[in-house]
Structures are given as C-alpha cells and as structure tokens.
Image (cartoon, rainbow, N blue to C red; front, top):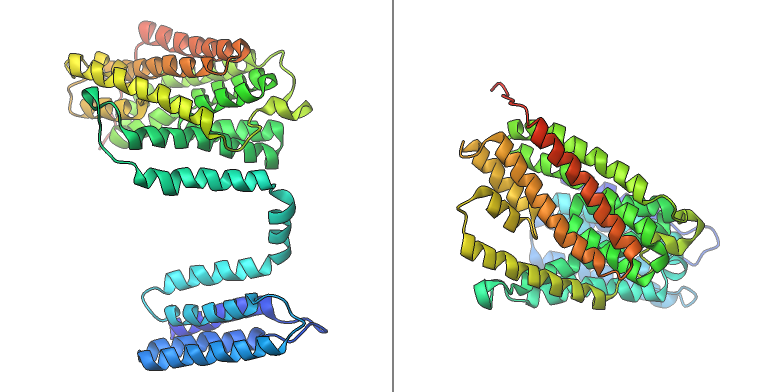
Length: 413
C-alpha cells in the first residue's frame, strides 16, 4: 500500500504543475496525472507485461489524439510528462521506489519552474558560457574515459589519465570561479572560489588563478590574495585527513598547523593591500572566461614534467628515508604523503614530530611547484605575492617546530 500511496502522491505533485488555468487551452491536468500514475502502479502490481504495454500504448494514443485536437497549444511537454508519470507510478511499487520518488520530485520541480528556467537559459547564460560548459563536460565525460590508464615512458612517468585529470581540475577551478563571481559578485565570489579551491585541490586552484591572471593582468593582486587564502586552507585539510588515520597525530599537529593557517591569513591580507578592491572593477576578480583549454593543457605539460621528477626521485632514492620520500611525494600530492605518514605513526615506525615535519616538508615542496605555476601567469605582481605568502606560512611553521616541537597526545580508548 505504501507504494500505491507514493504513486498517488507523485502523480499529484506532477499533475499540480499541469493543471490548466481558466481560459487556457485544454490539456491533461491534476486528476489525469493522478490516474495515469495509479495506472502505472496497478500494472506493476499485476506484473503482466502484456497488460503494462497495452495500458502504456492506450495512454500514449489518448494523449496523441488530445494533442492533435488542440492546434492552438504549442509543445508536447504535458504529454511527455504524462507518459513519464506512468513509468514513475510503475516504479513506485518496486524496489526502485526511492528512484521513482527522486525522479518524480525532479520532474515536478522542472515543470513548476518553467519561466525561471527559460529566463536562466536565454538571458542569464550567454552562448559563450553554454558552449564553454559543453567543452568542460567533454573533458570529463568524453576525453577522460578514452585515455589509457597506467604509466608510459621512462620510469612510467607519462600517465595520460592522471595528467588529464589535473587538466580537468585546473579547468574546473576557472569554471567554478567564473560562475561564483558572476552570481555572488566579484569580491564574495572570489573568496568563495578560494575556499572551495583550497578544500578541493590547492595545486589546481593556484594553476587556475595563474591562468586567470594571465587573461586579466589587473586581477594580479586580488588573485594573489585568493591564492594565498586557498593555500592556507591546506593545513586544516591535512589535519582532517590525518585524523581519519590517527586522531592523536592530528591533535599533535594542531598547534603548528593552526599557526601556519593564521600566518597564511595574515599573509593574504598583506599581499592583498594596495590592490584595487575586487568589487570596484569586475576584471580585478579574475576568471574572465569559464573555460579555455589551451592554458590548461600547458599546466598539464608542467604536471607531466613534475611527474617525471617524482618518479625518477623515487626510483633513485626509494622509500629509505621518510623525509626524502615525503619531499619527493610532496611535489605533486600532499594528501598521499599525509596518509602514509599517519600510517607510519600508527605503526610506531615514526614519531609524531617526524610525521608532522614530513607533512610540512611535503607541503613546502609542493609550494615550490605551485610557485612555478604562479610564474606562468607572466605577472610578477601575482607570482611574487604568492611566493611571499608561502614564505611567511612555512617560516612560521618551521620556527614553531624547531623551538616548540609537537605535544605528545594520547586519546583514551
């Protein structure tokens, strides 16, 4: 009975959006949709394929005749929604009832927001933004699945799928940043994109910020501030990642990492001084294009070069030294270093101090790579400020670890 009730409710939700107003051309309305949904549910309960096919065909034929009689009404949205309602009602009494509910709610929402969706598609989103969106989605759903996995070339450094994923990340930073600035405003959008970029991938965000500055040089100072903010978020993110492996290690790392985060926030304020407020000039917020593949491919080439250095370093140095391994691994990925050092700590093959120093070293080496990415902007006002931000962050961390170390923390089990 619960499935039948769900079918009735979904039929009501969808039908409510199609109920014709007085004076409108006739079309299937609320009661029709409820009955069609119940038809689907009853066919599902009976479980007879011939009955289901016959009922669906009869409903489709009835809708076609009704539509043919209404020459003043444009489109077939109502008829398509009615046929889909039959399928939704059918699914409501099967194990796929949750999918049925989700699809029904989405369909009702689409039908109920006709005018806002039309305005959004025609007036809010430009042709260039639409085409750029298609291009960005093509990177993810067409090109990426076609690329082979595994490594090729010396040391297996050329990993097409991994390199292309980095290209997607850099492009995604620009794409998300562009629309955040468009809908939230220059200043709020830039800050929001920095926070999201810091939580997602600081390397990709720095590369995307450098690309934005190359396209809009006036944004150098404000984008430097955003890049430093994003990179300051790396430290709490690493602590959260370490906490999944060892809460004790994460707590031990709170003092130095909190200091580096605070130093990063202060550095962002310092490097952002003297620049034109983002809100006063839209171009100063960066991200003037949602998607441009050319510059993203250049960052992919840089990433491939760093992969070569990383693979070569691991080949010659191996994993004999934790700090050497952390430095090599940190060139492209601090997350993997954080997880491995936390596991070493849990296995008691590393002290808390060595693990925290290793994670910090990996982040510092990664900052060297990101500084190189910042240089590709061609704007000293951007790259120098980003480098200065890194210097302040890691100087604060190094001084703290040298003089204070990390506390010894034991969590009661």
